Image (cartoon, rainbow, N blue to C red; front, side, top):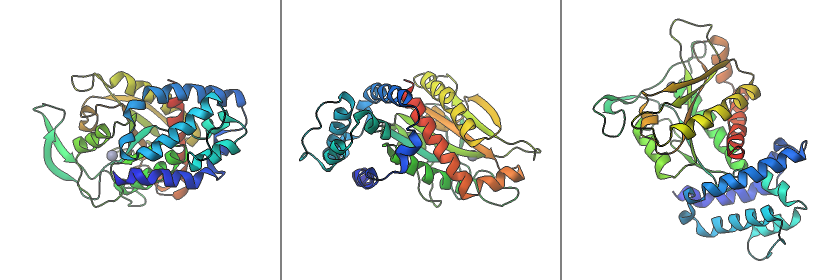
Amino acid sequence: MARHAQLPQRHAAKRGGTARPVAIGVAAGAIVVAVAVGLLAWAGAFAPATDAADAPAEDTAASADAASSANGSAAGDASASSEATDASSSSNGTAQAAAWPLEGVVIAVDAGHQAKGDSKQEPIGPGASETKARVTSGTTGVATGELESQVNLDVALKLRDELEARGATVVMVRTAQDVDISNSERAKIANDAGAALFIRLHCDGVDGSQSTKGFMTLEPGENAYTKGIATESQRAARIMHPVIVSETGAADRGIVERNDLSGFNWCTVPTVLFEMGCMTNPDEDRALASDAYQQKLATAIADATVAYAGAA
Ligand SMILES: [Zn+2]
């Protein structure tokens, strides 16, 4: 949890930069306003989930910053925090909020699988008698030989940066290959973080079909384990999937409901799983292994997260 305390430093370093506001768009002011207003309502709804206890000073400063941007009140007390300087230098409070659309929002990110699977069993949901392997090693690129777990991690690290650039507090399930974290344990990390959304990153392998390719979103079905999160997870999937398909230009493999995934069934926070492409398709395998396409995926998923936030 020490990582949280460092986040505002990273934010502060990026605040003066020009990286993200450009992407969020100066083109359509009305849309920016709408997103900002919607977002503030959404962020408010999730406010109890934020991890304020970890870094009270920084979080308080950030909240004050967002509030003064939101209501357009006088730019406050320059001595309150270093961010006040930033706020007062912004001529437009709405633009400031739009530059940080995920301010105060906790997003958990799981890079699916790990270097080596763990075939020991765990229940597929709380209290379940049915079990599955704790975690598997995933698929392998048919052309590149790349491990799915590595591609997932590469994109997850880029996604973390993109989400943080939009103001989010990101909790990473893993940042290394050599770990042993089961699917239920991954869900619990997101639960314990009080994440507003748990994003699970995977790539697909389709037996017997090198031609199948594209981007697919998995959502939890409503079952005995997921009834508290299924509706909201499905809403996230429906908002996010088209944004990602559009931005990446990937073939659209649709949204698929799943009831058999431990990583969904153990969740008490909304969750979606992205099958980012098919490593059994040689072209898509090569793309997934490339820095450029990984970055495109990360940017698209972060933009989709903002869309979900703003659509509440
Ligand atoms: Zn996978």
